Image 1 (spheres, rainbow, N blue to C red):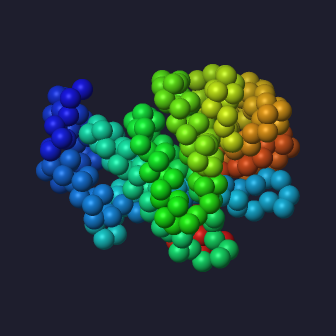
Image 2: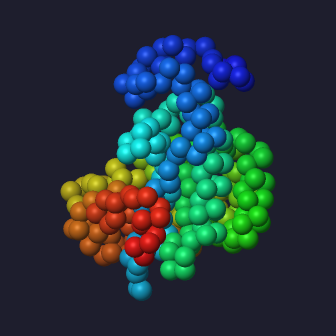
Length: 276
């Protein structure tokens, strides 16, 4: 679908913006608003720690999340603005912004804070052939180890853009970064992408984790993922962990890592890391 390079406008804008009306209150020009957010650094980095369930335990890394600053104290959650970035084809720019600012923060972080972050990559960025080179240049500029970054690719994106996902994963791993499949098992438990993408982590979808205590099917799916992960040397992360009983069950099933509100809530990156 063609997009005007100056305004970001494309066919169907009116219908889309009408549907997003509540989230876009006060946005007379959504494209310009997003352009301003990127140019003036009006986005804020948050993170959610990921807990190791094996000795010695502790928080080993954190997933990067973003908020959009609308007013001094108002932060819009990603669900309110990411669809607009996607609509205007601006996700590669946003992903670049996130990488740059995460690395800038890492370069100046005090000892003892998080030294490894995972970043979600959009399906639009998977097709951006210049993105891996951009990441490599930023890492060199900040003199940071590539293994400090893990790039999360949604399972749905892997299925929709298999060729692009394989090329992206190969390029990022070639630079020394890590790769994860996010939302694994949301549709079906297929292990084929694990071989083609050579991932470092599998993030098991919340639909499996939340049902772990009341569904034998969910437990069997998770056990299968753990077995395969152990066989091929891939770390298994359970997402959306919200109950202590589920956390205990994950440990019993030998799941390697856990993430969710029952483990640690998202917080601004500086606050969360300072607490480490």
